[in-house]
Image (cartoon, rainbow, N blue to C red; front, side, top):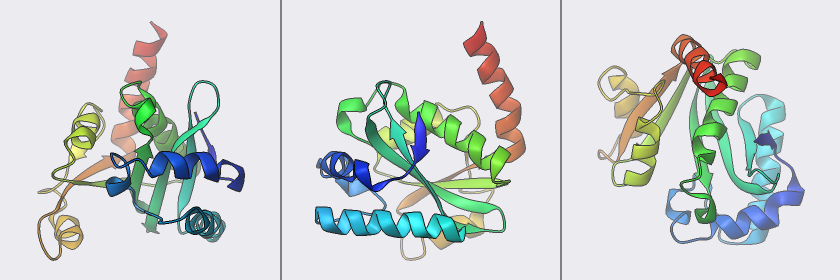
Length: 179
């Protein structure tokens, strides 16, 4: 479902990222394949330094379909960014990637809180996130963070996932899947 990033998948991911439906919402929008390759190398290096965690999202056949990252990691807290190519919309990959990634973050990397900032006009992403029982709107509960991501104007809604809340819900999720 997710795996560490490597340079061999860059051609496929770059092609998916360039779709006009996806491109405006990508955290690291690149104008050329060479720029995308350079950015991926940087992400791999940043992960080695502990400042980000980046994974490739795979479809059921094991092919790359998008990416999921935790960036700006400070004091066991960071921001998550996800994108998936349009041919894979509506197939449950977003939810499965987030659950797998969050499990890794909370259990292996000891992250406490994950924030997600989503553009207010990005209705597709907002609806996808609001379906997940462990993600909560945090505009009011984390007002200082909300202000910091909207320092010039209110562009983003802020959501968060707390470690304990996710792990409690994760047992419910696994139970539902098993029955």
